[in-house]
Image (cartoon, rainbow, N blue to C red; front, side, top):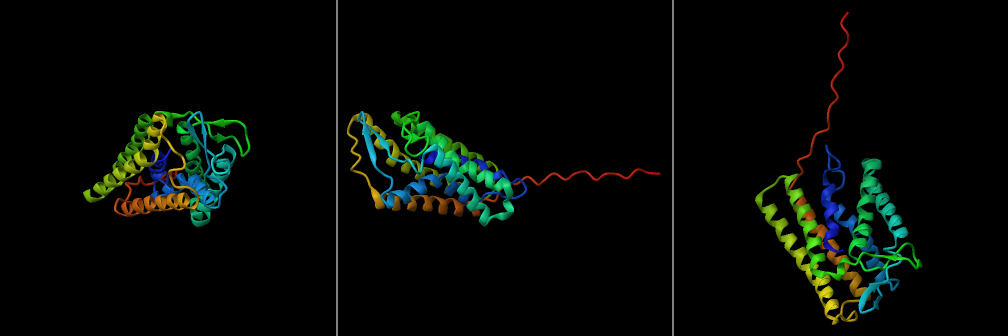
Length: 243
């Protein structure tokens, strides 16, 4: 999954109720934390190879995307957030933990079986929705659209901020179609060439740039759309018994 990963980031913007618990731009980075790890490992040559099995591409991602290491990355993401936001408490840790781990859950839906249980595991998981490129595109962009519409409803701001968010959605749709849907169509047509795309350091830098750009774009929009936060409920004062 690619752009669909951002849906949980948007849904978690209200977890703090009386105060924003996880800024949206931070959540944008959290849901892609595993891919950020993958980008770094690709740049140093540890991951990034693509296997062709039966004419279909399978990614070699044992350290960034195995089930076991995903739980570790989720814990690391939560700890990093707590270091910079100590007042977020245990709730902040677990929200970021869930955001980071949601990446593996969503990847399980679309990936072909290339998600190992742990590095070196012979069992690899994946439900292969990417084998239906247009369905996968509709699924991911549908999740993102629903999340953005929800965010507009629970925030307030000028119409220009809604237009900016819509432009961001279109840009993310172009990225999704270009880097995920088109290769999927080529796989179905038997014309996919894994050596044609960026590899190694180039791929890693491109991924880091893309995730940073999207986080910066949503941060710019977030500053113009403060949330309609629900104030914490006040306990009713207890009356003293009259004598």
